[in-house]
Each structure stands twice: as structure tokens, then as C-alpha cells.
Length: 76
Image (tube, rainbow, N blue to C red; front, side, top):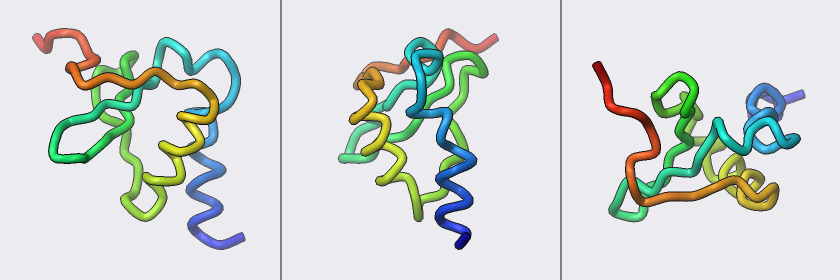
């Protein structure tokens, strides 16, 4: 398996099953950029730019929520 497929396999919980519904969000941070945000850890997920588009596509297909507003809780 190539490294892109290994990375996608590692990130598959982001779009599989109902457990992701409240945890991972597609966050539109402006200027057309989108990130995957982990609400449990309250930080953006570390998704390599090489696979980010595919991860977001799969998350959308699975029905992941999307937002323009900050999806986390206040820090501190």
C-alpha cells in the first residue's frame, strides 16, 4: 500500500460510522480553506495537505457537519 492509502486508512474514522457525528467537523476557516476540527480535543486534526481534499470529500459523503464558525469550545 502506498503512503497516501496508508494515511487515508489511518484517517478513516473521520468519515466512518455514527461516532464521528459530534466529534469531527469540517471547518471553513476563510479564503476557501477548510480543515477537519476535532471537538473532543478542541484542535484541528493533523491531516496532510496531500490527502485533505479526499478526507473532506469522504466526510461530506458520510454527512459530516460543516461550519464557518469556530466549532470548538473556548480555550483556557
